[in-house]
Image (cartoon, rainbow, N blue to C red):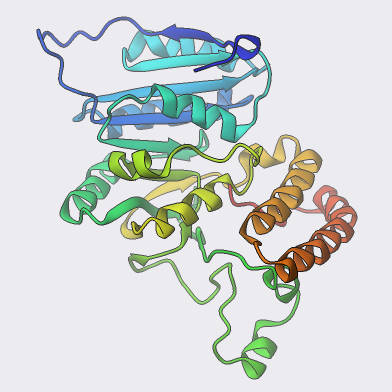
Length: 321
């Protein structure tokens, strides 16, 4: 339930035109978090509507106090699509808390799609992913291949990060392989993303989650404002015995880092803090906790030069949301 201080404004579209005494349960619930995302939504919502046209669905847009006309745009979109619902927060509650708002409203949908507003979905993508999920009930989460708007493949899967990855990513991989042949970097540079396989964590921009898995795992951890809540969620999915599948036979287009670029300095600071929080959550023994202190100090040292680089070039350390 929402607390009184943060009570959002809830708006709904017109009632469904489907005539039935007993409406069937919504098959897919889509949750999109919007923060000054009007331009992204203008592309994403029509594409999503086409991709879901053969399914029962509800689309929840959780707006984090946008100031760019996102709310007005979604209200206009509701006139065209009666499945769209919107929650309007009076402040930016962060990605994770907003996702959890949407999860509370998802009801008994068979599947819940966590989707970034800067993702464009071709019409065949969701049907293909659902076929894969239906074929194998052990798959708790599935994600498609991601491509840039020009069609090139985006690296979108990673291994669960370890404290040592904070340091080793600065070293040449060839050198690391020479001294440690079994070394595999957490950003999966050894994977070309052109074949389907089980993975630790796909990019959180598109996660299709089975209802039973979500019921077992629960909500995202709100200690993570924006970054690493998806990584932590995937880790809990795997720990609970579910499989996470990367499906290369279908794809979406992703404008990677669209949300990050809108307020990059704050997002870089948030990503470093959340990385440390994620690793701290996994540390249980005294030695591990001391190691996390060292990692946190290193991340703090790295932040100023990364902030400087953010002004000079595209990209950032942790473009993973």
